[in-house]
Image (cartoon, rainbow, N blue to C red):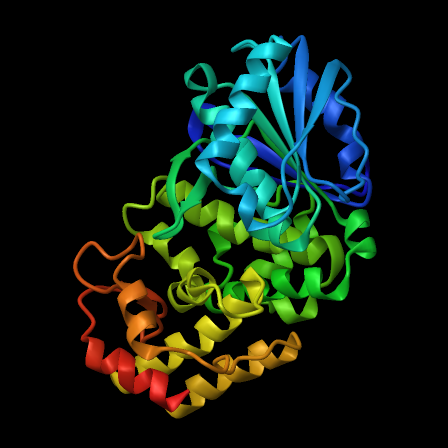
Length: 361
């Protein structure tokens, strides 16, 4: 498909393509034939959710399994039920799981594929903006516990990812908005020359990004591809989140805490948008950035039509306790924070600083 932009996730012999563009989902059958991980597959299991309504054809025999809507699908019981259904269908280690949906589907499908028979191939057909620019790429899979988000999971890289930008035109505005929070995050991570070079199929776009063209000037498939390239470069440098990959969690510490608290009508990207502003305020309290940089965070978030104010009824003690359950909290409460040299992981933040920043919000 001539209009498709290809971004490669460079992981040595486990490298894989991310295909971005209108109609990219129609390349699924050819991708399964061409990937060394799926070329011998005789059957596929398609995991999706009710109402997604995106038809795919893997080119081999398949059966579709639906999981529940929303975060309630991200439970260990869902993984157990899926693996039982894989067995009854006759899925073997040489076959393939195909996730069709947004971030919940890619997390669940990827984790089920990672643990069934100790690992079968998975391909993601991402149907939401959040899924395309973040969740489907990079191999992080997982489900929630009552104590926190994504606390049980595995790193399991897909064989390929298809980001069909055509399906974004049918998304409700709020579903798009949850992806905008992740888009805002990428503005502060930035596109390095190394990331731009991963867009091998469109050298003109790669050159523009290498030359410093901002994400705000891009749209459609080019914008999605640029975000994928940023994430792919970070993942390649730190696949299992031993260090730099944690930068992809910018804004997520407060965002996840708000989601876990569960009393607020917030989608993931909406919670991340609040978390981005909060992370900037924390950095300001610590003297890492100035007021102008905080204002820049507020401008970027506002440009996507996102609200960055704390929701009413927040319990500061509860939120600070939830910060301590975050996966990054290995050396005390840990945040990704902006600073004079850009984003970095900062451990051991005093709860008093965090409380002061909450009060400033």
